[in-house]
Length: 458
Image (tube, rainbow, N blue to C red; front, side, top):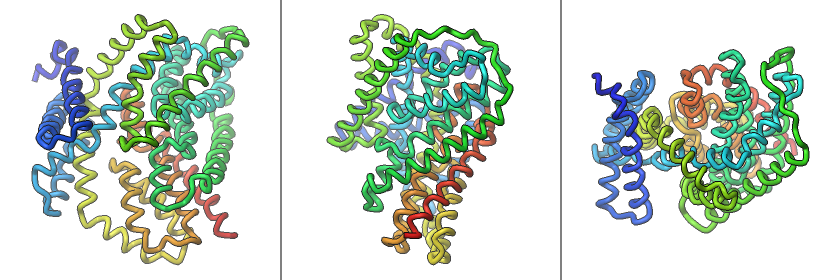
């Protein structure tokens, strides 16, 4: 077993993932059947190799997902080759996560990470003040950069809190970045759950928008109020950097231009292509980062830093590979099993009580997220289950709760991308993140259900 600790192998693991992603991209754009089979077999082999090198927790998770997924698929009449093919269903997510260091490097070499620090720091180093400002900053970036914002802000916060206790640093990062991100994306037109709900319900995005913003603002205000009590009288041992307001305004303007350009590209490509949201963002990150570095005249520094960051990041991608690839087997097996039909029967018992339907929607989304079922998959199931009872009177309320609950659980879902990315970065158990944020998820869910009942009164 000493091979598992061979540093020569661990330092060159990125070649394995690079080969898989190259094959995946060729197949994605050519759709050659034979190549698709090769990608599926390669992905399954990568899952097995990554499992050997993953941490004990993720080996257990991967083994459970694969075992249950295989049982569900086989009992539903699927072939073993179909099970192998299911491994690739989350490859876009894994590819997306693998290239995040490139956008982070652009922000760093452009000096924008220093601007973020200037925006969140407090002269007296009061943590309660820093929390509110970091919440706003993550919220602002999250609307534009989506998941990339979490990666960027967590790096900045780690540096700012480097002299703080480990428990305080972890608690602050877990709360300020993951919660703010969840608050920001519930009304973003770039969020795939928002688009899925709009398409499935037939509602206009602009009909949902004011209600989603209201849910976001009310929850955000409650979060700021609660955090002031939690972090009151807590201070940091960190140097305060005098801020040149003119330079800060210039940096913020540069950041706005950068983020607006990125969002515009994502929206344009998303509208005029059928790539899917995650693939759209993933395919834009690298060329956008390279072009931005050229415009900033920092290309050589960017290339050197980006390559090092990407290589090191992908050399430690084993846990994520196990999670996403095994989750594909489980999710697809769940979808073809009798379980969605059983869920439809349960909802049928309470179809006359809208508030109970909304609470059950929240509980189903949250419960399945705890077992690794992505909210997107859960919502796809719920739309099928609820179609007989959705009508003009309750469709808006149901849509609001589906969107917000589908995204509010993200800070607490132990196998979700947000939490696993953070657990990997901080080197902690993902259930620590669940314990820290599950109260926030329920608070946001119940606030949303209360707001969602208002349209029923008119």
